[in-house]
Length: 373
Image (cartoon, rainbow, N blue to C red; front, side):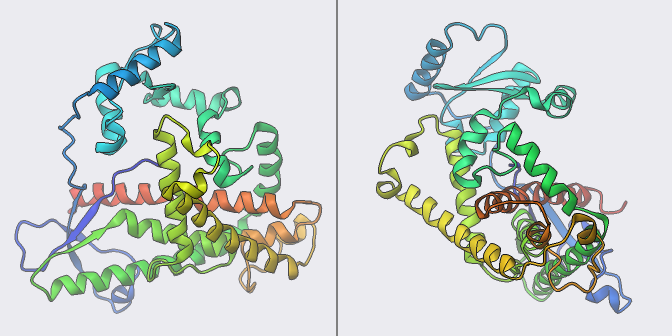
């Protein structure tokens, strides 16, 4: 899952001074009328003081002592960031990771109580781990955290399951499918453009600037694209709050909480009924599962089984349902049960949108710094 800082775009009235202007070059309703616009935009990160480091307290010192005792003195081979546990709650984690990067270098061990992680910031080392020797590393705590959400989906799955599912899913991403998805991208992007244009017009005619959380907008855009492209389901989360999308964010927040809380209390009996946040988590999961189960059921009821080659030659420009789910259900010989389909779809829904939203957010942030180029 992507770790990014939300970027806010401030859309100011045209009378504002000292405002960077970002030229609009996208195909929109205004462009269709042959007029180009210079949009007054100021991009900024959220108001978090990255210079303020939480002071270590007794709880933090006890956590670090526990780490050293459990490690048995084996932490001397690598720089160790003995972090304050409060760093996980008082400010976004990436600020702390950056502080420790400056202090310890591009590879160090991060320890919180019984949990310890090796943090890698060097791109060459990251490539060695993720690309050149990906099968040599266990997914560890990541799989432990994500399995209750994604089951045996592509991210938390063991190596054998991952190879099997990837082999089945990959044929679905063929040339004609990608071409059809470009039309989905354009449709969903146009919604976002129209929404942002309306906000800009509101700023043009008002005395106050309009604040837009770009990461949130791009997350909604990516989720809508995934909904149509993967499930043939229109969340329309750009324009309205979908209960399914609300549940998606709820599960993401819980996954983030579990990744940084060093006592896995959620594994204790009865916690899903006693602890409020765990009750909400399981309620959110039920909302998503019910939606996916209905989509899988509907797809199977209209199944038209065919070989992979014939599926890849379908006329996707005229198909009512050109989704990846339709391809997987219709594919002869896939022999996949509802549970595995659910896990694969859940993985794409939960994990597929964050990275795209983060890239778009930071791209806009950087472009706004040099609007004249």
